Length: 375
Image (cartoon, rainbow, N blue to C red; front, side, top):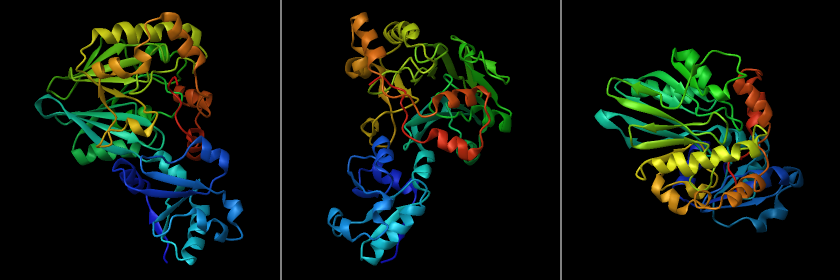
C-alpha cells in the first residue's frame, strides 16, 4: 500500500459533507482530549506515537477493516511514520498534511448571502479553531470583519473577485486568536476600525468605531451600521449589514452567548452583556440573520458549511437568551465558564501591538479550541 496525503481542505469537505472518516490521532492523550477533529460521521482512536515506536501490530484490532484511515499528529512528522507502518500492514492510509497546525489555520470561504445591487457577503470558516470572519463585497470594494492572522487568504480572495479592500473592522479586541486586521489594512491602504473602548492600550493608529456610525462599501449604499453591544468586552460592537445580517462578534453565538471575563471583568461586564442581548438586540428585527465571530460545536454548521441563524430563532432556542431572572443570568455567566483560551493574555497584548511574536510563536499561542462562550 502507498501512503496518501490528505489536506486540511479535503478533511474540511468531508466534515461539512458528513462523510465517514476514521482518524488515528497519535498525539499525547492530553492534547487529544483538549482539541481534536470532530464531525458527525468522524470516528477516532487516540494512541500516542511513543506507544507505536515498536510497531502497529497491537492496535490493528482497534482499526476498521476495509476503510481508509487518516493519521493525525501535531505537525505531520509522527503521522507520516505511523502511516508508513500501517501501509506495510496492508492498510489504506493517509496522513494529514501539516498536522493539527494546518487544521487550525485552514479557512473555508462560504457565500452566505446576496446584498442589494449585486453585493455579496462571504463567511470564512476556520473549522479547526471555530473562528468566523467575513468579507462584504460591493461594486469593486470589500470590507473585512474579524480577520484571522492568515491574511493572504483574504487578500487573494479579494484579488480573485477583482475587488479592493477599503475597510477592515474588528468587532472587539480578540483574546483567543491573533487579528490580521492591522496587517491587511497596512498592506492594502484600507482603513482599520477598532472600538475605542477596547483600544485604550493599543500602540498603533486606528479609526475609532463608535455605535451609530455607518460605513458605505462601494457606491451602492451597502452600509455597515455599528451597534455598540458591550459584554464580551467593554468595547464590543456588532454590525448590521444591508439591513439583512447581524454580525454579532462574540456577544451572541448560535448555541450560546459570549463570556465577559477575558479581561478579568466578569462581575463588572455581566450587566452590559445582559443589556446588549436582552434590550439592544430585542429592538432589532427577528428576520436579521445572525453571523457570529465563533462557533463552539460542529453541529452549529449548516448543510453548506456556514454558521448562521435568524435572530428570532435564537431568541426562541438559544439558552442564553431565555433567562428572565437577572440573578440567574448572572450566575450562569459568572459561574459557568470554561477554561480560558490558551495564551489569551499574550494574544490580547499582541492584538494591542504590545507584543510582536514571530510566526511560529503565534501558531503556538493559538493552538487549541476557542473558548469564547459561556457553557
